[in-house]
Image 1: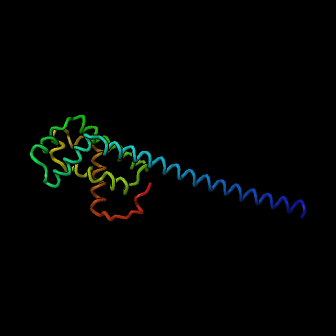
Image 2: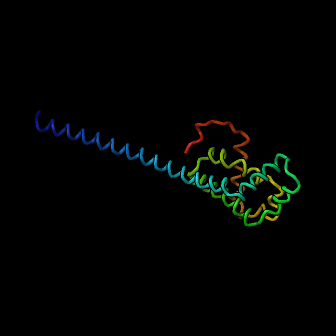
Image 3: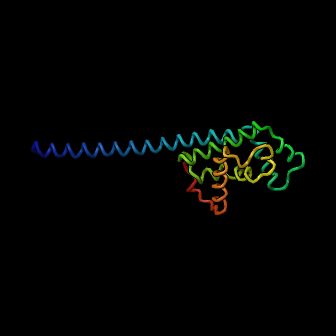
Length: 163
């Protein structure tokens, strides 16, 4: 083997190794991005379903929509403290911002959070002491509207539910 042939083989081998390393880096970067998105998703999901106040609001919204709420439960929904309602709406706005930023895919946001966002937006009693058409609830309003549109044509496809 001549020096020129060995040099060409080394150049080709180096290029192949460099491309392999680059490809591996891109794959690893994508996996880390998905992992970070998943971690953020689980934090928000935990906040919604492990906060007793939020769990109670979700239950009351569902019962109101299904017309199974007692008058006392409906009163609880109306008289829920402003701060609790504010925090509840803020959580959904965080989901909306994450969705708008590409950190959560819309099918995942709909599947995991859309149901309660829609119920909240449609509830008359939840909004008794809030100004529903305030410019400060536009992020929530747009999120709820997006969830309603997706819900109208919802077809469950588990392949869409990924980070």
